[in-house]
Length: 320
Ligand code: WQD
Image (cartoon, rainbow, N blue to C red; front, side, top):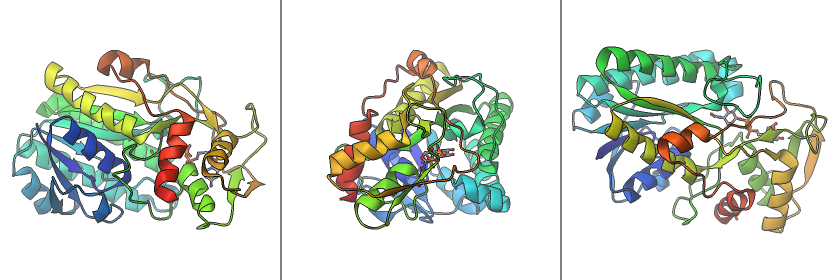
């Protein structure tokens, strides 16, 4: 299929592009390179340098004719979304509506969307399944949930079939070592650990060591980005075959603590990685992990690279 990947120069986007190419799809990347990187582009693909906030630019892209599109062009910093919701309203909501309007105008009616575990808010039970109540605790999470609702309406009214893929904690790098672009000012745990290992940051601050978990630090469900990327390919095949929308959580059912990830990083990198225990970060639940039953049943999705050692090794390969 001809697939437009919007945000395809970003960290997750570039891995999605690679998975789509490997599956035999013809990919075009659309990106404004605000956080995406030119070095994440593959020479085999067409590239459109464009902005989702300029309707004529996104329409010009869809006018070229695509069977499907993947939308990953969003801001994703939870803290920033609480301080500057306007930025998230414009880019994440208005930008997405621009894309969806352009897509249906030019008859591209298969959409794969990067949703997030942030739609759920504080867990009421574990593991989190798709039916868990949705009470986002951040404006970022709210934008993702609203877009899930827009997609359901466009399905009903315009025949847009969608896959909402709710990523838990994306981590790791391309196991082939082909994708090597580093995120600028990363907020997430593993890239920050790696920055300390490389001397780009003095120490890792461990946010809270008094949680009710096996070692006192928070438990998260880290999913390898290549496993996430493969889910996009499977979701596209599902929509094409069944002409039906779907919403799935992408997690591994396995939780890892902050200290476990830190210890594995020390062992694998051979670096000391100094750390300091500090106060809890507001809004962090102690424990968050998903059941992947639905993704397995519907898509046959199985994480292959999401064990702690592969997550850390593939990331260290890039950072070292
Ligand atoms: C993981 C754990 C921190 C940094 C966020 C979003 C979520 C999704 C993924 C997009 C937590 C601890 C972190 C540090 C630390 N994003 N930590 N020191 O918060 O689970 O999820 O990213 O969809 O919506 O909320 O990920 O990587 O920030 O934190 O101790 O310097 O590491 O407290 O326990 P989080 P994270």
